[in-house]
Amino acid sequence: KQEVTQIPAALSVPEGENLVLNCSFTDSAIYNLQWFRQDPGKGLTSLLLIQSSQREQTSGRLNASLDKSSGRSTLYIAASQPGDSATYLCAVRDSGGGADGLTFGKGTHLIIQP
Amino acid sequence: DTAVSQTPKYLVTQMGNDKSIKCEQNLGHDTMYWYKQDSKKFLKIMFSYNNKELIINETVPNRFSPKSPDKAHLNLHINSLELGDSAVYFCASSHRGRFTDTQYFGPGTRLTVL
Image: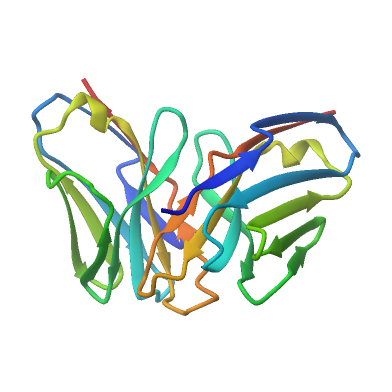
C-alpha cells in the first residue's frame, strides 16, 4: 500500500529566502506525482505535475523534481513571498491502471514572514 | 466559469439523517472523484468514477454512495449520518490519460454532524 510522507510538517522562514519541501513515497511504481497548495478553508490548487518519465517541472518560482527510483520528490520555492504561505501537499498516482485516485501526504504548513 | 463546483459549501445536520452533496465540472473531464479531509487535514480518496462506472472504492462504508447522472456530475449521498462523518469533502475531476491527468479540485463541502 502506497504511503506518502512530507517533511517538514511545518516551516516558517523570512520573506525572500529560497526553500525546499520534501516528499517521499514507498512504492516507486507511480504514473505521476502532483504538488498542490491549499489555503485555509479553501480547496486545492494544482501547482505542478511530474510524469513518471520526467525528472523535473518548473512553473515560475516553483521547481519540482522527481527521483522515482528512490521514491523522492522536492518542491523548490525561490525568493519566497508572504503570499506563498499555505499548506503544500504532495500526492502520487499509482500505476494501478484505471482511473485511480491520488494518495496524499499530510502536507507541509508553510509560513513566510514579511 | 468555475471549473469544479460543489454545493452546499457548508452542511450541518443531525445524526441519523440522510444528506447529499452535489458536484459539477465544466472541464469536459471523463473521470470524477470524491475525497475526504479529516480533522487532522489528511486527504483520502473515497471514490472515482469514469464514464459512469465506479473504478475504486477505498473501504468506504456503504452508507456512502456516489451517483453520476452524467459525465459532468458526481453526487455523494450519505445515509444514516454519524458523528465520525464530520469532515470536509472534496470533489475533483481529471481527463483519463495515463501520465498527464492533473486533478482539479472543487472548493470543498464542510459537513458537521451533531
